[in-house]
Every structure is written in structure tokens, then in C-alpha cells.
Image 1: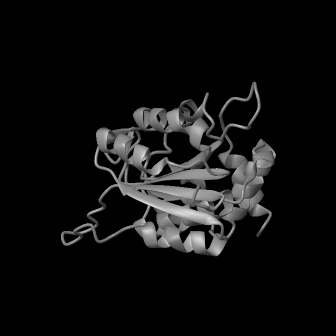
Image 2: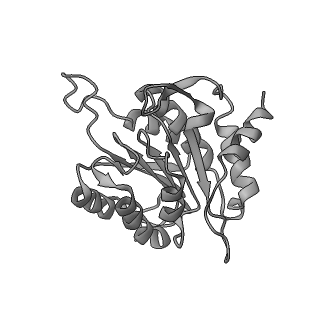
Image 3: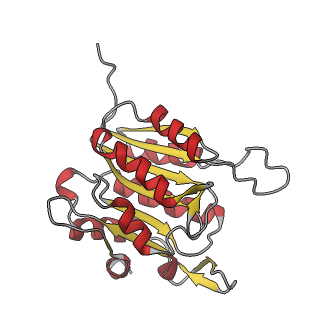
Length: 230
């Protein structure tokens, strides 16, 4: 007999943060994501650590056991424009894409600095997969600030249903998710150490369901939607 489970899941893949010299795996996004799941209801959270591409692959195999109506992958790790948690972004997306159809992985949140700075990497990463959207940052971002924004996106996106994976509905979802955050607040810095506002950092890429749709950056549209709440 199959064990009953929730209809939604958040799969958290986290790399050690070492935010200070005494951070011996002390810091974790897990309690925050578990709070999101309790708030949203009907949502299960699974967590695994990774350290490189090989361990990420193993962690993905470990967490991908059940098909949910809506599963979201949350990558929580240090990053740069080409990698997250010592895994190249193209490799990370390739591994997730292979699981996306069988386990209905519909979205990816990159909770890593600078991973959204190259939109084409995100677009290429989700194309020809079951992944419908991806979010990431084009700058550095404070750990707690980023975690709060990530959790807001996770809470909203977990409610998306199959019929909601259109550009218009996803833009509306993400605009509402980030409505509590000021778009002009500086959340981090660019590679030149100049301050960067939320609206210039947070990137959204969507790939609507159905044939013939290509992945595209809709960040400007999301922040236009956000402005409707102010």
C-alpha cells in the first residue's frame, strides 16, 4: 500500500554556508522553508546537502522518489555567474531537467549570489524540460534578505496549478509574491562593489507549458505587476 503524501513538495539542496569562522554547518534555510510549508499546507519539504556535482547528483536521486502535483527545487548555496555550490549551472540544470518530467519539477529557485546575472544561462537551462520557471539573483544578496525573498517566491509558486503555467499567470504570481519588498531597496552589490536594488537583481525566466514556447526573461513584467500592489 502506498503511503499517502501531500500534493506539493519543496526539494531543498543546500551547500554549507560558513557565514563566519564558527559557522560549523550552523546556518541553514531549512527552518524557513519548513515554515513556508506549514503556512501553505499540503506541502512536504525534503532536504539534502551537496558539495560538488557528484554529491548533488546523489542528493537529487535521494530526494526524487515521489511524483507530486507541483515540485520546486530550491538551491541554497554560495554562487557566482557560472556556478552554485561548486556545481556549474549548466550541469545543475541538466541534472534537474532529467528528473523534471518524471517527478513534475515545475520551478527552480537559485538562492545563490550572481546566478541570475546571465539570463541566457537560465533560459537555456530550463528549455526542453518540464521546468516552467526559474528565479535567481544578478548580484550578491544578504543571506537573511535572500532567504526571505526566496521563501516568498516558494510560498506563492507552490500554489501554481497546471493551468497556471502561462506567462501572464506566472508573472502575476511572482509579482504578488515579491509585493511586500521594496523594488528600490539595495539588497547587495555588483562585481564592482556598487549597490544593487532588488528590481535590478532579481531575475525571473518562464517557459509556458505547451508546444512552441521558448524560455524568456520576464523580470521587467514581474516588477510592473509588483507595482500594482503599491
